[in-house]
Every structure is written in structure tokens, then in C-alpha cells.
Image (cartoon, rainbow, N blue to C red; front, side, top):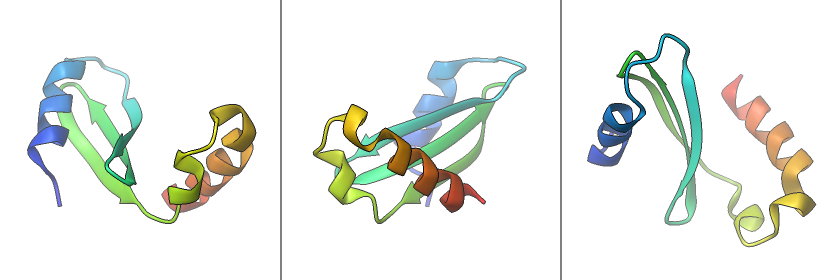
Length: 73
């Protein structure tokens, strides 16, 4: 489901020829968004990472990146 927030984000990031990849938190979910040339290409709510959200990024960075890369594939 695409929400108003994702569409507003696409407008905020502007018209760039390179893709912008943003990982944000919406309540207790991570949202992966890809915007290119002002258009929303991809928005995905990533579940299963709630235990990482309350911890400092330095402690969970590698586990978070590994898990997200698998989720994207």
C-alpha cells in the first residue's frame, strides 16, 4: 500500500537522475522507499526488524544491513 507520506517524500527528494534510497521508520515498521526523477519507484514496509529499532545503530548496523539486503532480494 502506498500512502500520502511516500508520495510526499517523492516530491521532497526532487528530480535527480540517480535513484534515492531511503530507509525510514513509520511507527514500528521500517519503510524502504526508492525515488528517481521525482517518481516513486518502490515503497516496501519491512517487517521483522522491530527488535532493532530501540537499540543504538552502532550495535545492530551489520545485522540490520544483512537482513535488509536479504529482504530486498
